[in-house]
Image (cartoon, rainbow, N blue to C red):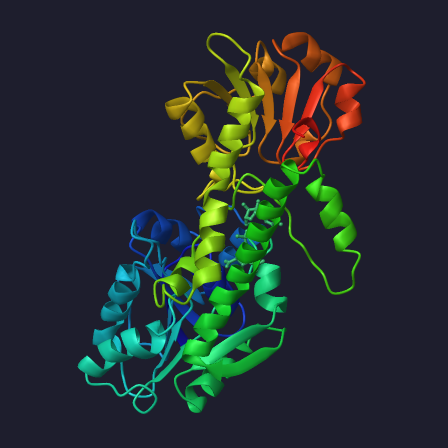
Amino acid sequence: MNICIIGLGYIGLPTAAMFATHGHNVLGIDVNQKVIDALNKGKIIIEEPNLEETVNTAVKNGSLRAAMEPEESDAFIICVPTPIKPDKTADLTYVEEGIRKILPYLKKGNIIILESTSPPGTTRDFIGSILKEAGFVPGEDVYLAYCPERVLPGRILIELKENSRVVGGINEESAHVVKKLYESFVRGEIYISEATTAEMCKLMENTYRDVNIALANELAMLCEKMGVNAWDVIKYANKHPRVNLHMPGPGVGGHCIAVDPWFIVEKQPERAKIINLARNTNDGMPHYVFEKIKDLTKNVEGKIKVCILGITYKPNVDDMRESPVIELIHLLNEQGGFETVVVDNHVNFEGSKERDVYTAAKDAHLLVLAVNHNEFKELDIPRLKNIMKCPVVFDTRNYWAADAFEKNGMEYHLLGWGRNKS
Ligand code: SAJ
């Protein structure tokens, strides 16, 4: 089949490479000339294991190429970003541009698939009405379906192949045709459903995690006032066969879990109460951690230096999108008047940073573990004690053992553990 994929980002590019190495002819479309030039040379500009090799193989055997303009094809797949606007609603500009771009090349019998995470109704109502305006009856003249991905960065090629997925057609025929297409490389189960159901399903997968993380964060805040260790509560509660409490932390980041729940809230704000509250609870965590840091350093006179370990949105990735640590640093610098120094060698970022933990921690009044990157697990604690102005650490991830610090004469504080508070 001739397939045209609009958007060659974290999802579009690997999807294009998979189709192109499983018997199809793929044309990738992007607005970024650099992406196009790289692909046509068999190269990529993002980091993802084995992706460059797969792209290279497909480009060499002629089954994958990239351009700015689409061409007539059998199937069109939209994989563009759906960012969030400042008013917390989805920005569908790229989806609309993508659809309008393919209209001149659309013929009866073509397949149109949306992969981008989108508010419920986007496929059936938003895309459906653009197609109708252009003279195509969705489901009759063209097949139309929503088919979201479920992959984790770092494992994209493996998970594209192995994970199950849901195809939501605007009618049954559309769903079946799209299922058949994805079966060319997907080994996981492909479930057939309806378009808006599949959109809601994608959003709820991430909302489930967001709400459960908010519950863990609320538990952490409750425990601090009770002299209880929330991490112990979670550990023992999770021994129950039907309980899976999530982990507290300084907030929720990434481009999925911190964003997708808003796409549900925007549709029915008065009903989506738990989802809205969970989002706000998680969004409030950097501020809560900021208040804790103020409290832990309240006896220091003059400029207070805080050393922060980690700035990415989760451990061992090179991704800072929506990271709650960025907001924490902003609060510390702007509202708190603190001097902050950050250590995170996974990413390049603006601001005061050091490559080495001990250079950064020199003369600091507090050391905060914000992201539990592997390299922060084993620290030279006696050395920290010697170089810091106040030998105090604040662990927001339950990554370190209190004992290890206390036996070396350092003060250890843990988010969600109220022993020093009560
Ligand atoms: N976090 C906590 N406590 C926890 C778990 C996570 O505070 O118990 C925080 C992390 O620190 C991080 C954020 O939540 O800041 C999100 O991290 P994550 O690893 O849970 O999720 P993502 O955003 O990297 O990937 C998710 C995945 N979705 C689910 O697990 C339901 C992935 O499978 C999806 O493909 C991806 O979103 C997506 O694209 O939707």
